[in-house]
Image (cartoon, rainbow, N blue to C red; front, side, top):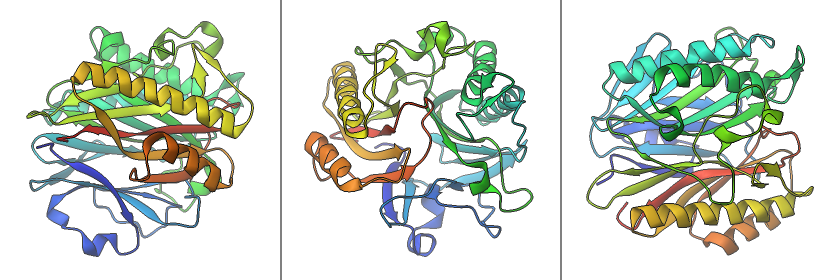
Length: 336
C-alpha cells in the first residue's frame, strides 16, 4: 500500500479524533496563534480559508511515525516517507534570496541525513510575494535563491525537480509574536527513491521560461509521479494556473479557472499515460486571490472532476500579479 493517505477533515477536534502514533502530518489553514503546539507533524499555513469552513489536511500513515528536529527543520518519518517543515522567523524584504538559499540547504541536508535524498513535493509560502524591493519582485528573488541551491544539490537538475507551489500571504497575517514565523515557510515530502518528473504538453516547462520572468526561471516540475509499489501511484500536482506556453491567459476569474482546469486535465492525461493506469484527483487545494463567491467556482470544478473530490478554498496571492486562481493537489491510481 501507499505509505500514507491525504485527507481533509473538520479542523475542530482533529487532534482528539485521530491516532497520534500514525499521524505523519496535520496541516491547518488559519492565522497562527501564540499557543501552537511544538509537535513536528503539525503546521499552520497562514492563509484564511474561504467559505466559512475550518478544514485540516491530515496525512495518515499505516505504520507508527518517529519525529525529530534538526537545524531548525522539523520532520516526521514512517520508514517510507518523510514530512519536513521549516519556518524562518526573519522578515528581510530585501534579502529573500539568501534567506531562501539557507532554508533550502537546511531542508535538503536534513532530508538526506534521514535517508530520504529525493524531494518529491515542496510547498513554499512567503509574505508579500508580489512586492518589489530594490527593483526585484520578491517571488523572483525567491526563485533565484531556490535555483542556487538546486543547481548545487541536484545532478541533471532539470530532470530531477520536485513538484512545487509558491503562494503569498500578507506579512501582517502572521505577526503573532516572536518566534512565530513571520518569514518564509516551507514544508515538503521526501522519499527514499525518486519520482518521475511530469511536464504539461500545453505549457513550456517553468525552468525554461524566458528572461522576462526573472533573473532565474522558476525551478519546479509541473507534477511528480511516484510509484509506491503494488500499483499504488501518487501524482503530486504543482500549483497550476491559467498559463499556456509561458503566457498568462484571460483577465477574469472564471475564464482563468476554465483554462486552469484544461491544464489539469492535460497533466492528468500525461501522467496516466506514464503510469499506464488512470489517475484521479483525490483532493484539491484552490488558492483565490480575493474573497469571491465560491459557488460558480465549485460547480465548474465539480463538472470537471466530479462531486466526490474533496476541495478546500484558501485566499492567497498567486506568484504572478495578473493570476487570480491556482489549483494544486493529489491524484491517485485506483489502487492508491
